[in-house]
Image (cartoon, rainbow, N blue to C red):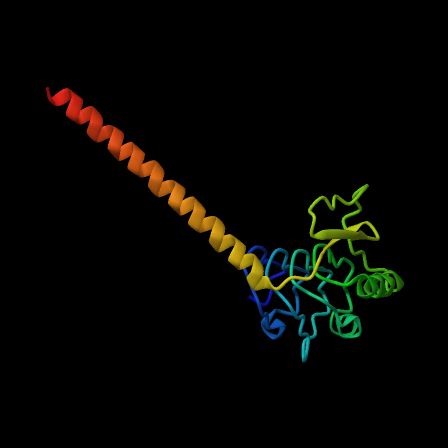
Length: 169
């Protein structure tokens, strides 16, 4: 796959990613909505990569010196809804602006409506939580839905038995 130019790996719960295996011709890499906590670019050189979408992960920092050395063609690096602290996101945005790398989609106003989000420079960021806390919330939701489904199926089967019993006579 040496001619692969676009790769969409969003919404896959990826926790760690080795960038070494990606082809040099890759121009877009979409990693949004995963569980990445670290961006390791050791021994990686992707000169054609122009888009690296890191939205909705669990990143707390980005080594931009490594990013600009290893990804010299980078033009677009969305970073919204990660777990950067305010001073860290200000540092990242300043460095991105110095290198003419866009960091958001240019929306008129960021919509940071969730209580665990805050806004910096027109992008929404999440308050730091561990990735596994969200998994715990998802498990509870799944259990509640499972119990609700069992009750619903039980009521359906019970009503069918009642109807069958009524028609028997």
